[in-house]
Image (cartoon, rainbow, N blue to C red; front, side):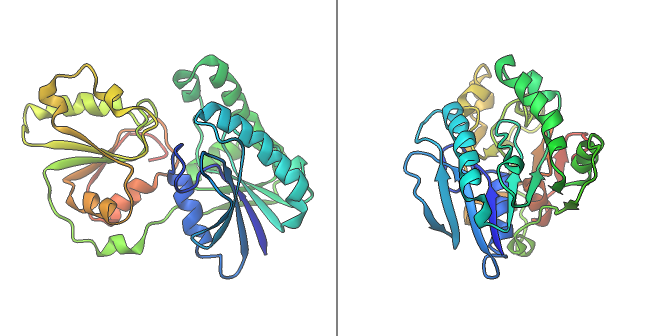
Length: 303
């Protein structure tokens, strides 16, 4: 079967490689020996078409350092790609983001499945400038209603989306996230740090709440450190600005980590925290649990 996956994330992109990207690669590396997989990804400076980890990659858009320009160009050119080459595939999987409405279902006769990781709901109105947030909110509310084939990551997201779908649905399945089995073999250690392992996104991930809470407990546990690891959507120095040096010297940013460094950070953490205001089904807390770590999360349905 020839499968086209529309997903803007790819390894090496300066615009981040998060849970949606990890999920796609983990799924398709298990399918690539039996199927012909093509990933249609957002172009970035230096990106070249070709095989990456045994998967065919096609990059479309513009080689801009601006995320806004890159996303806009990617949305337009990915839609053109589907219109021109969609019939070459047996099925198309469109990863849904409110910022990239491709309308791919209407551009080809090939069956298109809308894969929904998570939704922001009214949080987009609180997080972004109205110029962006209002269109994104409206797209999130109404765009899925145009489709009749779905893949969801969690029951919660499925229930929220499907409650608004009035038409007959042809295909609807939940494919949950998983973890690298190697994490189950990790020997956990009780280190001297709390670990936050996700995107450095102050509003979505509740990092302002985390720093405030860490400031309070630091008085009781002066030797305790806080390590943040993940793609820097918001600048780390912006997050810690305004706090006294006595606190910030205990907070480290490890960057975007993978492989052995990720395992080392997870295995050595005292606990893992994820105080998100909204979420999908984050792989990071599954990885923490697989590593034998206690996880403190927000009291929201998705977690």
